[in-house]
Length: 517
Ligand code: ADP
Ligand code: ZN
Image 1 (tube, rainbow, N blue to C red):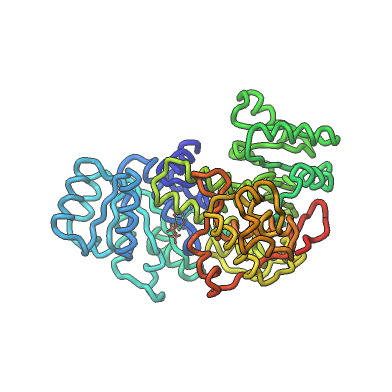
Image 2 (image 1 turned 90 degrees about the vertical axis):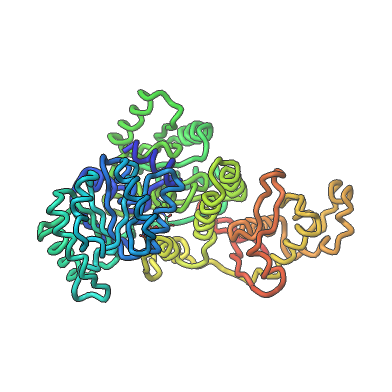
């Protein structure tokens, strides 16, 4: 599957599979008949698009939604993938262009509206161009009892038989009756490989904590779980070695793992982890793909992961046996800055960068959440649920306060100093700390000087971190550390919108008193 991961990154620009995607991609790529039920927004298109690139020949995608087909074709073409659509919305010229490209072998994904299946010659066309897979979106449209019945969907089963190729059907409708109809009408009654698993992993406890003293936070987290197998994910290779040594110094069984290591040494760590009880592996994200250990009892992130998808995948390595498992993710302003810079400095086109920022925002939203984390996580993946009772916020609801005034003061300090300074200097201004730099710039004469005495330094740090988490301020990629205001902050600055902040930074490891704010 290394190849699939490379394509995921290079063609689609994603750093990890979403829940469920990888298994489906593997089955579809392997030529199995597949029925996959995924919630809307769960990411089903990738489950046929990626296999289409790996497999020989053409993948025909049948979908009733013309606008959606056009979007997908455009997106694929921008990513350099040969794609085209044959729909009633096409002009004759557009149809000719798609046909020409098909016959030249330049199309990997051919989107088709179901009406097209009724026209004579479609079957022959699909055979002639080397169709090797049929993907059916909104497969519940085959159900005569459902709201979305499309008579033309009934022809898909015949087409599958005539072409004798595998079929992958996708829907968000999970009721048993509809499933039965799909199996009857699309797969001729032969049970396909089915994926119905929800995304929730209820045995995994979720927790986040703001970084205070990250090394100590990880050490005390591990100390409370002594003797149980765990993984600590770090943002850099160098850190894995240092932290692993610190754990050994505390008497743990621990080793490090990263992509820069000798392949033999890496295999050795993988083997030990699989066989030994209670080993802690301190690793970069390179550790995990081949790991199939059911009884990993905990996963900690010493640094914030790249995206919410990466987070889910990494914590998901814990507790595969279904027994209780625990996770802790540390995050701080430096992580946010680092991740933003990585996105800004990457070579991706602007739309993709914007999407990456949005995905990072979702993870930060989860980090700064004030109600059940699992609810936020599942909502992101399209599933609904009630409060879980198995996350840090359900265990101990955080105290919140109306942070509008504090945020406005901070924004005002940023704007009055020309969006030119980092949080340290801004906090000096807000708390009325007349350092040399503050006096040198004349910032002790600003109206914002000393208006923030209600919080101490740590309190303001927490406010700035939460502002970054809510994407109200972003580090300026051109000026190291300088914070700039974003558009979503404007209504708060103008007093048109309020914002709720967390009063504390719950620190699982040290149980320090809450920040005074
Ligand atoms: P649906 O299941 O509703 O058809 P889509 O396939 O349109 O969902 O995907 C929903 C969104 O999820 C899209 O914006 C897509 O770019 C995004 N997405 C899909 N897979 C991933 C992934 N592995 N990582 C990040 N984002 C993803
Ligand atoms: Zn919860």
